[in-house]
Length: 203
Image 1: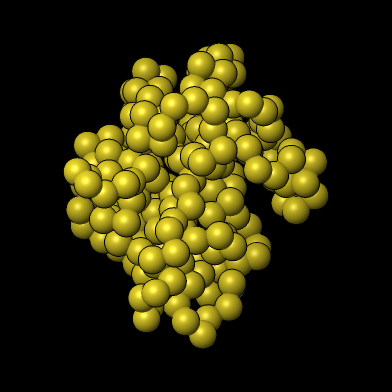
Image 2: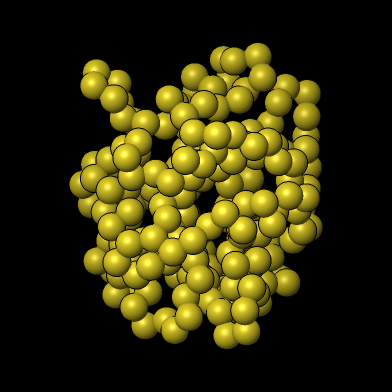
């Protein structure tokens, strides 16, 4: 996988390098969005959803928020367009996500925030099912996921793909074959939230 480093500016709904992220997303792609708690995964997902929905008139994006309530996100992001729909039903399964998304016309993006709160089988099975969903609906799917504490032990706090992938004898949430892109969100030591960095990996 090739890597590109992008700097994202918070807390406004604008980001340097955001076009570099969204321009590489296409139908059927499965994208992992991963980072430690508090690094801005949800914020970045909303930035991307807003941008993708606005690309063409009538476009839409759906965010399945399994942690924050819809009302909380709407207060936190008052500039969100009506084109971005937030669904906060619990429990949320793959079948439920498919049922909801099949109702939308001109769907540009699906976001699941986040993997560990989805109902169903193992995280690995969930991510494989989300990849199939992306291919079936021909829509890019972003799945947010928490990272382990091992990332914090590195001097630069920078995640790498091996942190994410399942391998023999090593737990992981994603199969390398299913993931088309990875967005790692992290904060190097000594930086504040507004200085969040994003590594974009793509095949």
